[in-house]
Image (tube, rainbow, N blue to C red):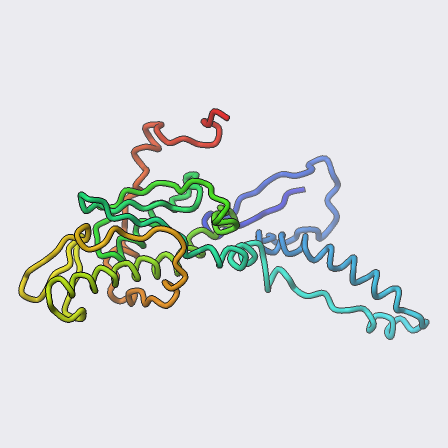
Length: 265
């Protein structure tokens, strides 16, 4: 029996399971999407409970009346899947990042996910570069160590990393940029609305500028107030949405990247 699954990141892939089993007519006649498959697994348990409750309540001989007593089975695959559960459970911990501005004015960024070749480091760095108004090559990314304080906010799976990081990472970085702008406005003696930021410098209209490193050390740890920050309008994007080379491409092709099989545990 062959089951076809499809994920948002790849074309349809087939996996042979139970080739020695008979294939009933009509079974899996159409491709089964991954989230639907997970939903079916969840609904199977719900169906068993529903049938048990329903049968216990059936007392008449009228089949139609008996069926009416059975509670409906919700379409969980259409309403809530694994990715949704990960997003909901991790939300309280999604505003926890390390974005450090080093003395040399470079940006150190830790990604609280596990990069295993799917490209999320590059995507996350692009988000930080966009909101902080720096070039991608000014950012030195690394992976955050596993920490219990992040709980489910550090889970990598379900193809949900970028969808879950997109909003909080933009807002945390936008809040940091606003802190830099306010500090520059105070030092340069001009209204914050006249400060511009670009390539790691905050500048006044008269051309005076200050390095980010002289204005802020960056942010580290959980910052729920960043939920109120206002990120850039997409019409102002200069990094996100543009072709960008994988930051780890050279390490991948030269064998420098360590995968789970390389770890000495």
